[in-house]
Image 1 (cartoon, rainbow, N blue to C red):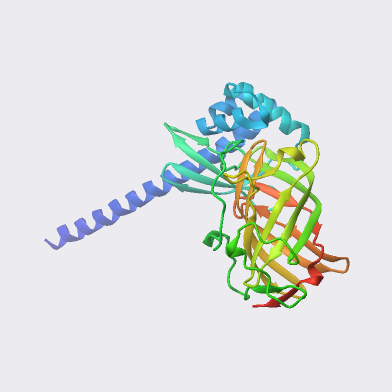
Image 2 (image 1 turned 90 degrees about the vertical axis):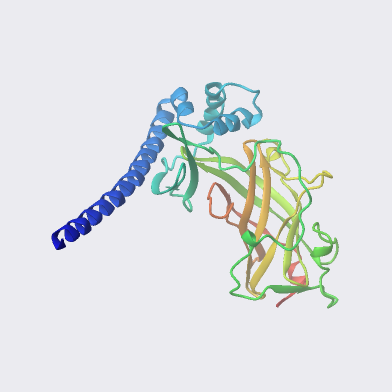
Length: 335
């Protein structure tokens, strides 16, 4: 009897180990397959095999490609040929990104790609049938000419909030009065608490095939901080010829440019850090999500600098900084 018990225990342990091993092998097999798909996509791009790239991408990617770059509706190979021509003309030759991690969850996966020119790029993949396919090419949330939506309002979504390491700052006009609350109007109240912003920024898109520029454009707007630490960048414009006129702040249902809202924290006399809810329509689609921003005092005056957006995806990179005029006239204090 005792021998039978020990045999049952041994078989149970062996069976559990076998099951656990199968699960691990399955996940490893998925990761290996996805890495192979990424590498094959990059090889196919090098030789211009658009048919192979189309087979390795989802129907959603085909729709993205067909709607990009002001193109007429077309089949995936025709649309991809058009987009690859655009990419090849401006591709930043830093080499193809390298897979640094693969996270698999059922039939969905996220591949982290080390681009070499910034944070890792998060690229989604999906299993359809018996194959893994890339399910978002540019990292956009919506296709070009996406529908407008309701005007945003405070409070800022939790995903845009910064860790509460510092209290939010508060802004006061030169008269000493607290700057008007932005909660009353998401676009902000025009007046003495506005700080004009204008400067050249480069907009790059990181993809599984490499990084290519959307354009180097002058970003204009008005930065406003209220008495509660809320901040809005409103009246956003990117004037100029193509490709800059393809970069447009998303509009609400009334046709007004959507402000980028957030909160600023930090040292009022030196540097303020925050996160804005960015939304930008481009010729390849809509980029929407939190973007890190810093407003720093330099010997030449206050300057605003953006990070990558949306935070965590690394798909859209904003480089360069803008002078912020009039910040010295606004009295910014710790909250």
